[in-house]
Image 1 (cartoon, helix red, strand yellow):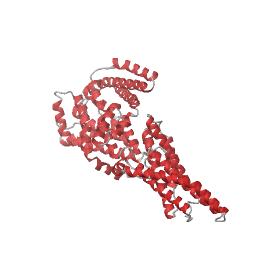
Image 2 (cartoon, one colour):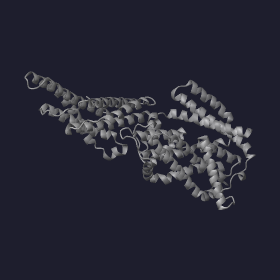
Image 3 (cartoon, helix red, strand yellow):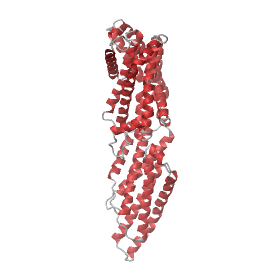
Image 4 (cartoon, helix red, strand yellow):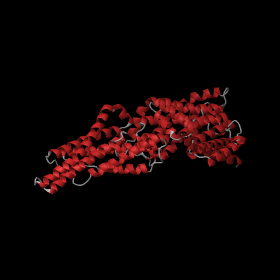
Length: 541
């Protein structure tokens, strides 16, 4: 009973320490986490490298994955770039096994861990900001060490009751090929179950390393357990994907497929790698070899899939196609955890809605069709609700200014939708030169605003492929000219139309209708201009 209590207590302390340490490290990283992921994910190789490095630093593959989902959802990263980061995170998370192999199972750190827990907790409680986060990271790290020491003690007692011969035999043990294969699969299933129960492959691997160090599990058996424990991390992703956004579901599916493919590769190579590890164990201790196997296992999986990442992403996208409206597909709940991603998601939604409204108004002015803004108006209202649920204000002053410009764009686009959707439509051309000129100016403004909005609303790859800086610059100038020309035309048109009533050239009702239409055209052009200028970060004059 005491052995069981020691093992369970050690695992519990380890999990608690990992949680506290990860929270502290994430707070210390702050915006640097998503800035690094966004900046260095240009190619699959660099994305995998930085995904591994960031995960190694913050000690949380889930933190890297959730940040990646937000950036992909907002369009700041492509799905392929996000997947490369997730692949790298799988390698980075194996760093904890090295901590266990090199320190955790070799020495009792209770004497050092307990004072560190006190110091870290004191800093956490009394400090603020990054100082408080550093205290949490220190206390969490000390809890991990204390948990490992407790786990090591429990495994020492377990080794007296459990022997490798009590577990299924695997390759190289003298058993037949079929019984060895069955033994490996049983241990893989056991490792998967351990991770599913603990909801942490790191904790499950820690138990396996400690058990091998205590002599309760053989080297080959531990390798089979590690394969299963790596697959087991996909169970939490599968559960998290239930009811989640399409981006989260795609990344979860890709993550599961990656784990399964890596496991199949490891199983195929099992008869080759185990004899090599057994021979190496005469010079290197088994715990270090297991940590190396854990890392190599994930590295090989990444090395196989990384060159095929484009085909792999297309395969996943075919299995899980995007079903949301094109206008609101960026409004992914995962983006709410990252202020920059949430702001960018709203910015893309505003741009797509603005383009839809302006295109509809242009068609109404040139062909006489009715203006349709229902879906775009709904998308703008959804964007307003979405940004209200964001986790907090941006970190830097530059990002705060960008958020303000996005809110201005959202406000003007919403006003544009209201005006365009008013009853009565935009009327028909009266034939008077001023009325025709006003309609032409508004239509031209709508076309230029549509061009700008389409560019802002594109995905990152589409923008790189089709960006035409000259045409966008020309569109911004022409849009501003049209809006100002309509503003200047409005008072003169009003005076001329109302004066015509006094001379008997028209009725008062007709005159008021003409004035109202031109006033609406001017308002449409003005709000389209202001919204578009804020989307491209140009300060309206």
